[in-house]
Length: 246
Image 1 (cartoon, helix red, strand yellow):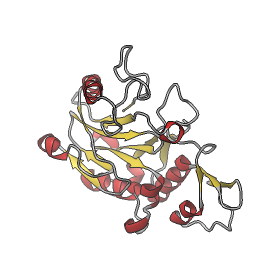
Image 2 (cartoon, rainbow, N blue to C red):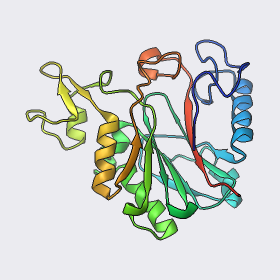
Image 3 (cartoon, rainbow, N blue to C red):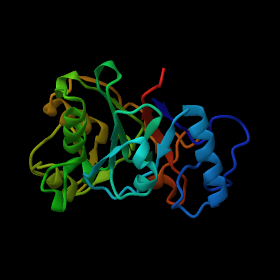
């Protein structure tokens, strides 16, 4: 498992402001040659090939294998699983929450991209969010129960920075007129939302008991993390998980 930061894997990373320095996103108007250099450096550090998805705030999860790497690149999906060594599931973020899952005995791993819409299963997803589909896909692939999985929550917009409206509460099935521990009222129509806490709640409901991380705020640490909410034009860090061939 590896979570990148904006200062890169070593000194001398390529991207210039406002994408400085170790930007992995090729969709944010950064120099594409610099982005490709960073992606190659990351692959070398992992000793596995990351597969970069076109993330769309949905609930689709794809299965990665050595035979399908080229076909899966830039596929529209917000989650990836693999049961094969040498393939890295990779999720780009700059305020959304990366969720990494691991099955026991190195049998499989998954990486999920969880913004509030994808986590809540908003709109056409009919309440079936990325945590649900990701957990189900990994459990099916390795024939295990959710209680067997471990989850790690990466950096995301924190509970003191994520101001939302009633549409977000409704997306999670929360009545704005009622109190809720993950939504702190700020005014008549604004709340502070705890995205990592909501994800932990969802994972626990699905049966996962071993959950770590979730304490880092991308918005409040500008020297460490890219944040779209803070800077608008910025880079992307990535959360990666893979199976070692050893």
